[in-house]
Length: 82
Length: 415
Image 1 (cartoon, helix red, strand yellow):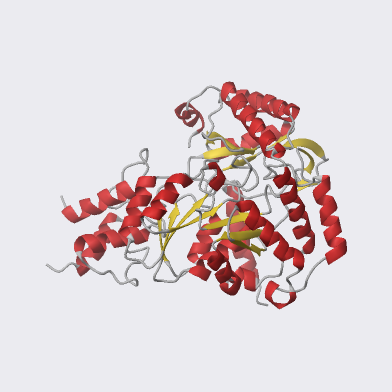
Image 2 (tube, chains in turn purple, green):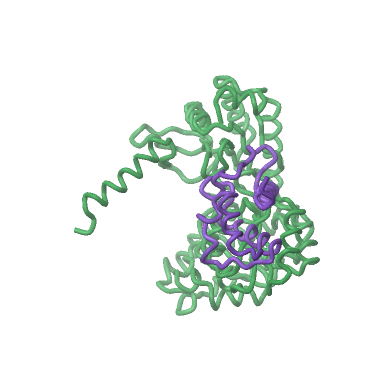
């Protein structure tokens, strides 16, 4: 299991899903699927920046880059220094 | 030719797609003034039909009230039809400032500024008072006009789950590093008819040093013991920093709106709010009518009291008949049907029975949350409500949804 992806998936589930919503997987479209609206994307970005001590530039934080757990994990990995 | 056949075809296809999806909005032509009973031409060209109106924002029945009409006539005679100017050039009459003062008094705030509509008030207020150093934290179900206003502003924006105070608190904690925090909510949510928990919100805003903005369009005039709005209902008058509201609903239903609240915020709007600076002044006829409305509402609570009784009667009747309602105690009473087509068919069947009520479905409400939204008015008499109830029960039986659970309705009709 990929820990980063699980962290993102859990955050999205707690933050955006209603108790009776269908569960999401790593490929579920989040923004284009209407689960995360563009207003709410900002808190997800902030959560990731705080948790992983990174800065995601605004031009990288596009709706496309935030559209699934897999894509978000890919974006975060670009900035996390090993 | 710029408007080529290709461009025309592009739009025609988009309109056809709306039609095929069953979400093309068709307007019904009303041949009377707004009232509990109206004469409607629907579909276009059909003979006029007298129906009971169960979907107007005419909460206090003031849209065609004779005293208001008389005052509007007098305003027209004394101050003319239009001003042909924005407010700050040569568009401010004595009565404009008078209405601003009367609204301030009515809402219990520090100052008020008029806008052509509440949509304009919401479009202008955020940009006028916030910058990119600030954050706006809004309820996820706020009205579209607030969302548009927030989008026009350079401040960071975030949202909290509908009426979830723990979630709001988390967000307030998260943004303590910002210069200013502004929490935004509807007072009464227009689609569900529930109220924001303003007492809790005021406490949280005080604790985390945030300002609070409430759009009270579906509350001003009738929520609270003397109809001042949700801030009166929750005992926080004077503690809400910004109230935006409309004259287009309970306060006569014509047009116009305002931002009311802290003096400096109102002044910032006067200096910087673009919909205020760049649109025409509100016509004198409207101002004179609304001034009379405020006089009526300040003199007696008779209308809001009747509205409260009517609402209670209507909610009880529907519940006993076996409909599923959204819980609440406001005159917005949504009857849940879940399926979009069912909501539309139900509305058409009601019309056949002489009842005008509209189906709402995605994207106006979330997917799978289709409903008929009814709105009660002080203009309704009990015989109107009885007749409407009889029609709802008849149509409810026809579609076999009475005394059914949510799941049973979904199993039968789908989401």
